[in-house]
Image 1: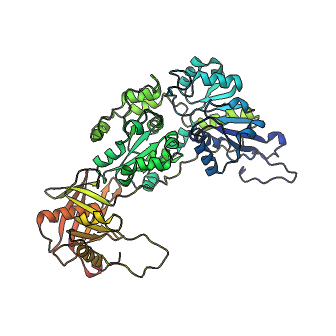
Image 2: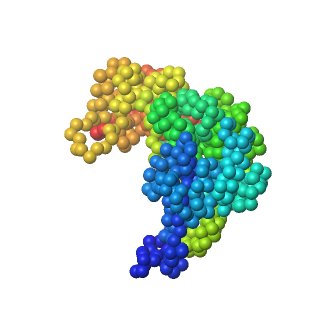
Image 3: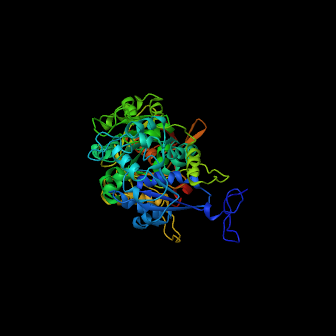
Length: 574
């Protein structure tokens, strides 16, 4: 029987999952009480345990007292949840109260309390808050206060070791503890087959996606090494690596979206992807080829799901709990020194290291929602509906990276062609030439370019009555920018039209894709025409007939054909 989309019965009662009519005793209210956005995200990941059950009414409230509460209200509004003001929430009684932190005046909320983990592994202490050297989330000062005011009916944990750690600080709380697993990890594991979709949404292509993960607080990556994203963008070739950054929601709240973007502006302009704090961070992790991490627990989700390289930037802090899963992970992965050593650090990672450390944080993988569902329905006094909803797949990333409009191109002539290494202009040393996209970069950069290229304008709904031909634009560019040696039109077809100063002919440039293990791999035509530009500079003259050369980009080689353009090719409309 389909248990979704049931309609109310004629006497005002609703059908239950097994076909019976729901009585008033079977209608239950669940309150999700969160102090911050990150706590709310944890609760949202657990909500599929109630999916499709119209006996359950879901309400939200903001627990006061956190510096990060404002963003939680925005998230509730974004998901369309029904919010109760705190004062009103305290006046009602609920069948179940879900929280992801023992902090705050939870004792004022009446009902069965279920405490979910705030993160993965209980790895950090917060200096100046609670008991000294106690892991946040397992701090006896908060656990005992919460137990005295509102004893949890269930303290849901992700690993048996966490129950033992809880018993050491609060035997009373441990009596109500059970290992259910981690609902957030369930979403990550379920979404692994969508990796190619996520990479396509990010525009990663054949590049390696290197993700930086920053937790919050004085020892986080963004505070200890704020310039690292820009340093990596200056060092790593753009056509070989894509960079993304995951920032803890608390740090985003402290800075604000505008301040964060301004601080990251050089790296964002160079193509850095800034992942959104809910769901998208996990999609980006799945898409990643490697991770740079501080002591935040994001790395444990990455290592539990993927056995790919991870390196650490955490040094000599006081927040990391000795012997915690993150401590074990960071002691066994390479440490990153200067940004220029990043590739060597990634190569030093030993396969299996991260995955083994993550096993100490997560148990019962693939079973978390089912276990949690059994526990909460028992507390509600209800029989679960017949259909158990699977973990919700993570959506494709919506964060758009900025494509740099100007590159310092480093070129090396080889026996069969040219090796190309492009870096976003202005953040690293100058190269063989400056390649600039006309219409996307400023006038100063355009006038400094040795190579100008043009891509088609974005499509609009309005009819276009003026458009350049490929030959017309290249002629115009060389006339308008006397310092430019080569101009290239890059139509949507991918067949480029090149004109060189001093030669009236137009030339066609075609870049052939590669075949790799059953996949077709292409490169940005703008990178290939930079190789042609460098080759022409070295050979001082255009070919009269077909020329074949190889454009080397990292470990890949792309064949490039250069020949005189036909009239139809030169007359192609941009």
